[in-house]
Image 1 (cartoon, rainbow, N blue to C red):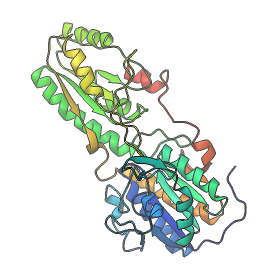
Image 2 (image 1 turned 180 degrees about the vertical axis):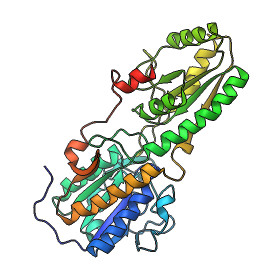
Image 3 (image 1 turned 120 degrees about the vertical axis):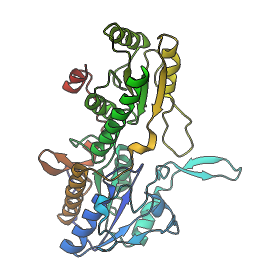
Image 4 (image 1 turned 90 degrees about the vertical axis):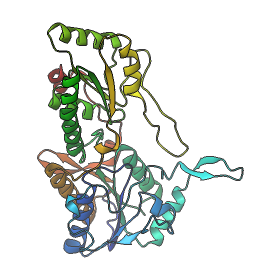
Length: 369
């Protein structure tokens, strides 16, 4: 249940955008700021670069923490990125520092974060982020024992957060990918090529699946369903027999080849593990098995940028307004969530119980097949 014990008088709140950037962050920041100031008379502190601004109060890149005004958020509903900055290497329980030997090690700076929260005179914290950020926020609030009420706002293009029907950012990113696939198809058809397009999503296949269906891709590879090169070769050969000599393969960065798993990059101290090389690995194997040219296109960070879609602007606004309203009524430690058609609060304990992944036997997978 939501924590409604000892409702606090709120005069000032903090807001931060955690993890990687995605379309829709600014609409949320705008909605929280406008609602807090105009409806409740609160002050709103924009905390720079996720937890960095709470780990070190002197942190500036380039602005530092700033008290937000109505003028500062005017017009940002249409802007991508975040006016507060983002960061995915400021985990307060696993923060990277350099020790006396010059080696980077992980250390717990959560006590420092809680103390700095109090020093800033904040009464509550709104954390805009994905599943990892929500877990951190929930853990911090519990450790603070009521001194740091939090509200989470679900952000990620991966769409993998429990407790909400959809996360903002997903709609814009999936449309960006679909637009790219439409253009890549023209080249694939013109040159009779197999085009392997790698997309983001980490452990979840929502981006690959949604955009793959929308673009009419011939093969979609997602983390939730292991794949074999043999099955892809058969698909290419079947199409060639029908006179179709081009193919679009959409592969999620976390897709798993049977018996080999997924392709991983380096894991830096204090940062999340990174996926890398899924499309290139498949291209190397597939090129030896088919008599056509295979090319790779890794869409990369283009998926996280750009002006948010109409859907993400409206969803972000609704989530931001609800975040402020939950704080005002004393409902703490909740995730504001879309439960179509309503925006509700979901206990953070529930929202952080694992990831929301594609059902291999669900209707989306059936539609793709």
